[in-house]
Image (cartoon, rainbow, N blue to C red; front, side, top):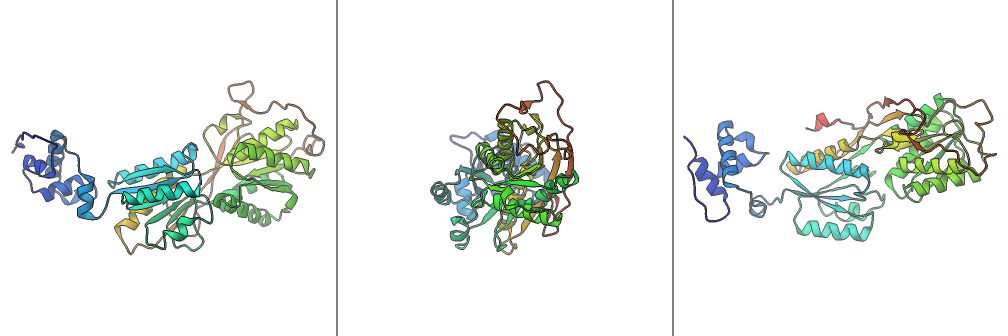
Length: 396
């Protein structure tokens, strides 16, 4: 029987859709909710969806929230939306939540505690059902204050040592191991490390990974070849690499805490007329967009940022569906992407240039569009982490 037409004086309601579709309002509610649509006969659900579209019906989230005690919104706290890596994380979160009928409310915090608290309070006032936090600071107020109060929180791109909070990260320890192993196989023994800030989780975890990887290869960890940055940016990378060079200690390779620090190393090497990779090999971390377009193209560790976001969304939905769901901490495997910024240790004087380098342009940092060929790109996938690691397939 075709649906009855209905003349409406105002916005369509759920009962209007029920009358047009010829079903009970409860059936409409279930058919329009992606989480419960499977409980409705397929033909009936199609008829309800067609009636809702015909009437221009839009669910009232406030009314639904009063009935279910759920707003179907999730607060997302992000340190820097201008960073393309976080953009990929947010896209993964949004896609992961959408299919379950949830909408993210996103706030950019710049890792500022005051801004984070204001955003958290504003979202709480809107009765979000939970928070996905890409907080970078290790000692963070949200982890101590709000989780203890029973708030639903999932961490993305960091975790806590207590395992009390659901979290998904890239396996930084394994990623740095891949970088060190790659350089060691190329003959590098004197490997420097431009580390991220130790106040940030990723800087701390990658530095620990570097120390462990060097010891596993029985390579000396020279404290004089480790410099800590204040921020994950290009300027700090140049400053740290310049400090390494000023210490006048021989090294043939640098493992940087992220790609921006690595690109800053390019700047410092170029200023000292050092060639990469002939004089110093450089490895970054993250595989940011466009790093393959620099000369030399950057060897780096690729982190699956979109999958981090999608997995964080899945962990949040898991917590919302069951109060008994245990907090899981998951690690996603990284890949080593080998490009032109790493090469075997040279046997010529160009290798030990850290002591004799002078000022002057080296002409190394060019895009692929200029003359010269870009280095070959290869990838080496890390093995799945042993500790409580799961792929997206196991979460869905």
